[in-house]
Image 1 (cartoon, rainbow over the protein chains, first blue to last red):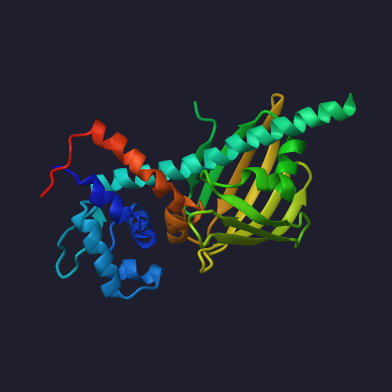
Image 2: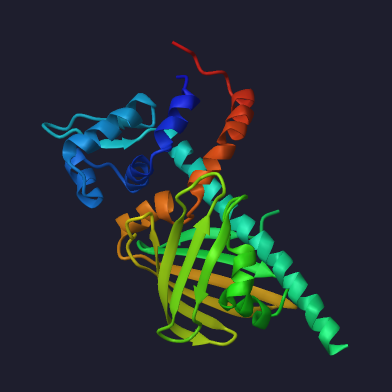
Length: 113
Length: 168
């Protein structure tokens, strides 16, 4: 199956949809269960789920009257990628801190000389 | 080689560890002196921190405001200190305002000598599992939206390394 990367990233550009994916990373959930923590109406959540489904990030299965959603493999990869970006931003902070600390150390040396 | 370790622990924790080539006193100061914080706690390229309030005493206030010349809006973080033990431990609570406040994140940061440097461990505690998941996806790194500016470049790289998507 081909995954359309453009629609995957467009789907990820929304914070609510990223949060839905993060929630589904913990296990499958129904629309009702998903709507609860996000304080959104079920139709609004359903709309987000449709975008995620069209992008190939989540799939649904039929269980009697329930339609639980879970992450598709592409969804897992997208989440990994997202966390990778988060990591990178943190790393950026600490790389800058390395520079600040080096500056502090050389100032200290100058003072005690 | 990356020195940063970011992992989840139990249902409600996120733990970040990082080594620094400076003694705990310096790393601690870099986390409590506003002038120093403004130099490094900026997230992705291009962001600045025009406002940095950091009252490093129990009950003291924290307020960081970030801005980007092209993105407008910006966002801020508020918090309060709970406990400070120079130069080994900081406990504080913080929340992001995007602009609605995210649930409180309690963070215990420890600075332990490691070789000639410092091992910093940041242990975050969120109210529940769902909040942690939502934080990792949205609130933790303010300025993540800015990353989309660079996403085009990332996508270019991706498209070259995987079979091209079929256009309908």
